[in-house]
Every structure is written in structure tokens, then in C-alpha cells.
Image 1 (cartoon, one colour):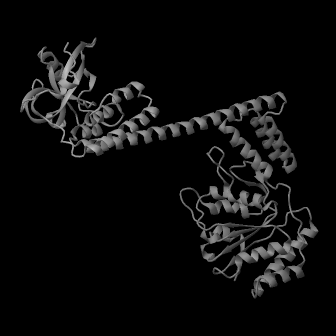
Image 2 (cartoon, helix red, strand yellow; image 1 turned 90 degrees about the horizontal axis):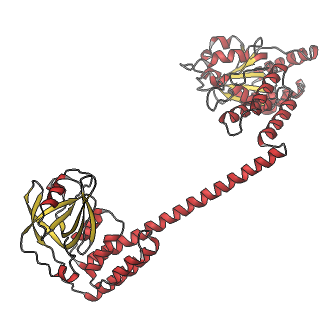
Image 3 (tube, rainbow, N blue to C red; image 1 turned 45 degrees about the vertical axis):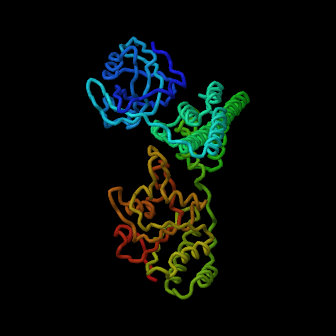
Length: 507
């Protein structure tokens, strides 16, 4: 075992011009003068180097690799500056590797690699610090460095009072900087830059910047950690409170699931569903009561029941068809269009007579289609008809609709499934007999997802629409009381099967 050199011996250590020393590459370590560190030796070259050292003169040059991931570095993979070091002690490890304690002596520059095998050897020269020209400024910077290090020590978990005391015993600014940088957590590249800096003033300034940055990084990390901890604590507190609330409600027979199930049951009863729809709804409600509230399936089932309970199965408005009043409303809202207005009044008169003869029967009639260019009042005329009849008005734009599911809805097996836009519009109207405007029916398209015009056949056909089947609901909904009106810019573009079911009024 070699004796550790004193600070004075290190300062007086003489490296003769172009002395040759064995070179040991280090993966992720930069050694500074006067620093004592352990190093792990496992690579074949490094083991050979240690074994060949003269027991009386164990001097080597340690150089950091530019890329620590390289297993077998070449001389070109090493930095040009390193540190002359003394190997103080070598330990044999159980896995046939070795560990060594080394002491940094001085900065050196590698002039030339004289050997590559069996390990690196190189001619080096000592790199002395540049003379200090403004000692007052350097001393002030050194004082700032001590202060910054003390501040870092307060927040850095890996630094102790021992490190602070160690710096207090160092008087020379150049040694102070090396020692401070050697113990803080920065990248090897940044440590290498400090090692290669021979201007003491610049070295201290760089060290100050690195220490200040490290303080900010640690403080920011603590703030983030504190915020995360507070959020976790808040979340845990809310969780415990919810669990306690569930337990209390369960004891009182008012657990979340049962309360919600009871509310849904009351809504279903108030909705006055048809018998077949009520059976389906109650069966689904029974299934819902057995599903845990945390399960994703619970929300799917609850949403389905809510749709069934929210639809206007039995809600309708009473028609108040006064033909004179209807004509007045049409005239007030639209100028001209006399032939169209006449046909609408005839249409309303026929509906009125049929309804008087058979109040409980379904009033069948042709589907009116307003044909004409944009901007002539087709859609607004539909609103006037609804106002004249005292009905709600809903509008569905069919322009660009190419998917049959837009009309019929998606089956509940799909994530995020909803009823089609027909059922959605009926729910929006709040009654089962609104005036329903199918706008731009000539703009329907068809592609690989299906033909929406085929789905509309069931909607508009009076022989079928009393039992319209939406894929999502999976129960029949009666559309026979809905008064459908459509609009089109070009009647020739309307699918023939739909056109046959309409009476087109040209604007």
C-alpha cells in the first residue's frame, strides 16, 4: 500500500517533460487533483495495467471516456486531458475483478499514445494553472463559491457537514473549486470542462453557475415532490371519505347503487313506457342493481336506462288546427308562395278531418317535400307549420350523412354507443309528435358503412314507422304521430325509393 501524498507533496510533485505513464480509461468518473476516490476495475486491459504496476511507483493517468457506454474504448474515445494519480491500495473482488483507491495529483495533457496494447501508455505533460492577475476578484468569487456551496448543502441530500468542513480548510481558490465540483451531482462532460479550465477565475465562475443551477434543480424537484405529495394526500383523503360515506349509506340502506337504482325505477314509471319496452327496461334495471358501481359496465347500463326513461313515449302536444289562423301564420312568416301555402292548408285540413273522424287512429298522409334552391324559405316554412299546429319543431340536416348508424344508432356493444339522430331529435323535442324537418334529403350518400336512405324508408313509411327499431334502444319506438317534412334542392338527386313516398312542392 502506498502512502497518501500530502497537499505540499502534490504541489511539489515534478512531472518531467513528456514523461510516459500507463493510461486507465474511466467510464463515468472525472478525477480532480487531491481528490481520493475508489474505482472499479473489471476490464481486461485495466486489470493487466494494475497487475503490471511497480509496487514502489504506482502512478497512472486516469482519463474519462467521452462516451461511457463504450465497452472497449480506443484512444480516440478518450478526452485529451486527464489527471495523474497515485494508486494507494488495490483490493481483490470475489468475481476476479479489482477495486482500487486512487489519489489525484495534477492535471495533465496527453501528448501522444506510445502504446495501445496490452493497455494504453502515453507521454504527458503537466498543465499548470494560469497566474492569477486579480487576486481580489478571485478571492471574492471564492467567498461566493463557499456561500453557494453552503446553500447547496442545506438542500442536497447527499451533502453533509463533513463536506462543508472540508471546504473550509482549503484556502487556495483553485483547489477549492476542484473539491467543490468533485462532490456535486453534475454530468461528466461538465466536470471535464472544469478539469480542462486553467484560468482560475473562469473556473470559479463556471463552478458558481453549476452550483446555482444544481440548487435550483433540487428546489424545483422538492416543489414538484411536495405538490405531488399534497395531491396524493388529497386524493387519499377523498378516497377514505368516500369509502366511509359508502359504508354509512350501506348501513342505512342508502348505498350509492341502491339510491341510483331507485331513482331510475321512479323515472321509468313516470315515463309510462309501452309494455314491451318496460319489460326490457326493468330487466336491465335488475341487471344494473347487481353490477358494482366501479365497473365500466355499470355506466353503460345506467346510460341505456336513462335513455329509455328520458324518451317521450307518451308525451304529446294537442293539435290546434285553425285553418284561418294557420293561413295567417303562413302569410305573416312568408311573402308569396301562394300555391305552396294552399297545398299546406289542404294538407292540414285533411289531417284535421281524419283526426276528428278517428281521434285514436293514426293519421296517414303523404310526406311533404319542399323542393327549390337554397334561401327560398323551405326550412322556415316548416317552423311556421309547427307553430300553426301547436307542435314542437325539430330539424335534422342530412347533408353529407353516409353512415346508416347516423339514422339507426350504434349497437350497445360499441364503446360510446348512442341512439341514432332520429331518436336523439325526438328526445330533444320532448314530445312524440313534433314536426320533424329532414333537411337536404337529396344530399344523402352511401358507402361501405351502409346506405342511410334505406334506413329512412322505415322512418317515413306509415306502414312501418309505428315500430321504428333503433339499434341502440333495441325496442320499438312509435314514430307514426310525427309529422315528417323534408327539403331538397334537386329532386332528381333524391333516392327513388324515398321520392315515391313524398309529395314534392316546388318553390
